[in-house]
Image 1 (cartoon, rainbow, N blue to C red):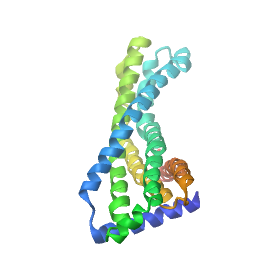
Image 2 (image 1 turned 180 degrees about the vertical axis):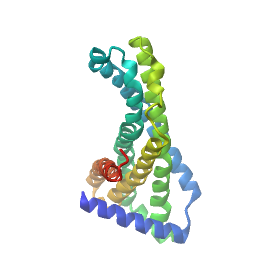
Image 3 (image 1 turned 90 degrees about the vertical axis):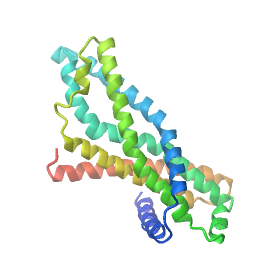
Image 4 (image 1 turned 120 degrees about the horizontal axis):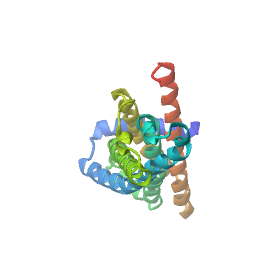
Length: 246
């Protein structure tokens, strides 16, 4: 993992330097925004929606014998969802889908010698292929977090109201959620958005030769992206704890 992290940091530095020198292709950025966003939105919406419903069901099973009404669990659950669970779940889902997709795309281009053809045509792999994916990831992940939170809250409200006869509005209450919690969650989503395409790109560009190289890169891209999300979340929690943010 440390080797992969080093490769991602080197790739980020090289990509920033090349993109600054040659400029960022806006058309390629638009394509990547469309590809990364549209592919991940249904997965995030469904995944977080199911999680919101499951959260209410779990609260009914565990908390109702103690507090009687599960609506009291709603405000602290939203705080936890905004600050920790929402960003982590969105990041993991995006890592498994987008990390593998980016790794597979670049590994396929490498196997077909299209990367060499691009460089021979005075193109730049890092400015034209890596930079748009990295910037698109950083822009898309906060949007995906918004979609995921909205889906989770909506499903939690509907489940609490119609399945358990409780006050569904409590699951959208920001009583225990401060603006700083939203800032913390979205900052982590932004960091995830940078790490996921970097992990996929670093893995794809380092894919071994042969047809099996694409498959190996695809699997490794998902794994490295997922582990990067976990590492960033742990680092953010540690920093927040040291600064007294909890």
